[in-house]
Image (cartoon, rainbow over all chains, first blue to last red; front, top):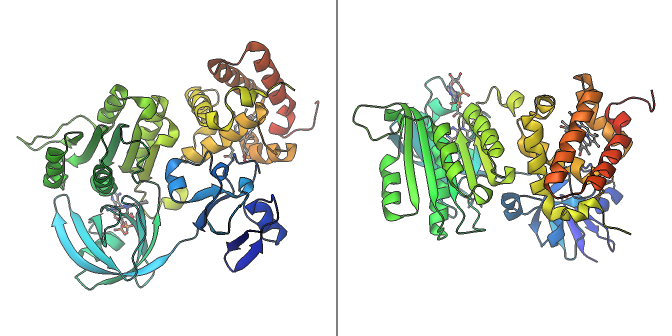
Length: 327
Length: 126
Ligand SMILES: Cc1cc2nc3c(=O)[nH]c(=O)nc-3n(C[C@H](O)[C@H](O)[C@H](O)COP(=O)(O)OP(=O)(O)OC[C@H]3O[C@@H](n4cnc5c(N)ncnc54)[C@H](O)[C@@H]3O)c2cc1C
Ligand code: HEM
């Protein structure tokens, strides 16, 4: 009889019983609704063991990679250790490097006390010793030992202004990783469209590097936008990547363009829709990161234009104060 | 026994495409789009999958009670018979595009009809 571990509980799974039923017979309530593998209310994540194939049907590719499955249709055949979707881990981290980039962007390097199991493009929550917490995306490829963050410096921003004054040795707590903005090597030939504004480039920079490292062959388009062209950062790094990889196209877009600068002044959402319309939309994979209003509008328009909903991953950089009401 | 319409349109593996088709229609239809304008599109899509699975006879354990709970907030925002009519119409268009025949679309519509009172949170037959 397989066993099921959940928190401090170790339960025996009776023949043919689901994870959800097993939890319930032990008196543990877990959210659920349809009880037929459809509504995804009872989503969980497997930490050790393998869930049967039909336990994650309908769960999107990114979640599947992270071990998510549906408790109501999961009939374990081997021992499993599972956690709820809100489970998170925490580790201490130290600032090891800081660099100022154009556009008031700080490139911050962190070293973790314990290796962090993350995918490039996911985000972590930085927690200061007094409890101030903000999410930031990981800009480095999967497997890197030092973490790279791109933080837009707001002079009146509680976290970003404090980070701007950090020095090597500054200590933080880090929670996560979270989110589904990362590369999945399920089809090396599918087209990828990555769209980011401002520091929305951070996760996209990681995703592009992961895709190229995986040997992605399909066309990759990265659109990076800012209000003013002088605020576009990491342009050299991106140009180098594009020069070395013929299937990568990088387009910079800004509403106001410095004279003589090679930047497109077409709005970035217009560029994105045009790219999507000429790509194989049914097979396109899209990543959208940065400005919340732009991301939401674009996700909806790309979906209505024929991109499957589950092929669009988005991280809206929602500011802290409005996060609860907006998300 | 004949195959359910759910199985005919391809069962679980075909559901995501069906949901995309249906969800595009409701978002583009001003009569009902306001009810579906969720910031969290994925969560909303999962609910629509529940809807399509249920009305096409796929595996589900929804009860009238669930239907009342799921729509109570919408009823408070003005959900009425005209919206149910519109949804049944868009559902028919979706199924037609998926190759489901007219006769069977009628069966699906009848199934949706059977929960109209629950969806609108009212007592039967008034
Ligand atoms: C999933 C996720 C990932 C994120 N990833 C990143 C990332 O990789 N890089 C990054 O720089 N940020 C990212 N953010 C945003 C980040 O979490 C903070 O909201 C941001 O750094 C501001 O925090 P703060 O404490 O400095 O400012 P706060 O103290 O929260 O805000 C104070 C003031 O700063 C100004 N301000 C803050 N945000 C904005 C804004 N968006 N536009 C204009 N003015 C603003 C306003 O004047 C505001 O009143 C992400 C957010 C989310 C939800
Ligand atoms: C015709 C009969 C209908 C049936 C059988 C039906 C069925 C369902 C089902 C099964 C769910 C998922 C519940 C869950 O898993 O939690 C759902 C959710 C929902 N339905 Fe319906 N529905 C009907 C009519 C309508 C109408 C007319 C509207 C609006 C115009 C509507 C809007 C919604 C919305 C917005 C949700 C998501 C609610 C939430 O956010 O929790 N439905 N419906």
